[in-house]
Amino acid sequence: MSTATVPRVTTRPHHPQVDDVTWTQLIEAVRQSGQYTTWPEAEQVTRTVLSALGTHVTGDERVDLARALPDEAARLIAAQIPATHRLTAARFVDEVASSIPGATPATARWDVSSVLSALPPLIGDDLTTRILAQLPPGYALLFGRAELTPAA
Image 1 (tube, rainbow, N blue to C red):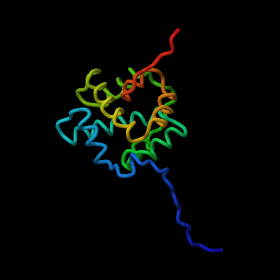
Image 2: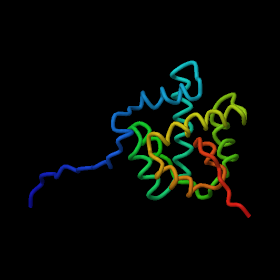
Image 3: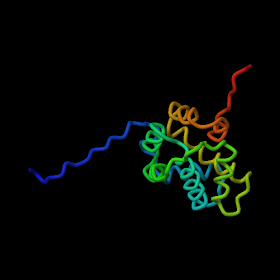
Image 4: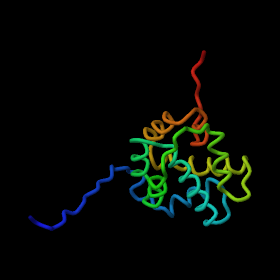
């Protein structure tokens, strides 16, 4: 019996939008989107929001989201234990606010939108749509999309 180890090969799906995107570029996109004055502020907001999002996206969408993002962002998503219940978009923003010192509901909504609206160009429309289908109504606006409701 051989004791040689077989290297583990992990393949990432090809995402032309993200192939060259790094953690630094993601943070810069958030910094510009949220008009943050410092890079560390944008990085902290990004870490907080992605960690919170990682608890609410599950299944294949969680795996695909982690694969579509730069490695540091993927680790933040994958490191979270999935929540046992889904939060409304407003409660999600409140949860983020409780994790950011000095945040108000208005500033937390800005922070969440600054990070989540930077994701669709990286992850693509299909995955964004799948993630939104998994979350309660109200999240689309946080991702920079219109929240369409069927006409009665």
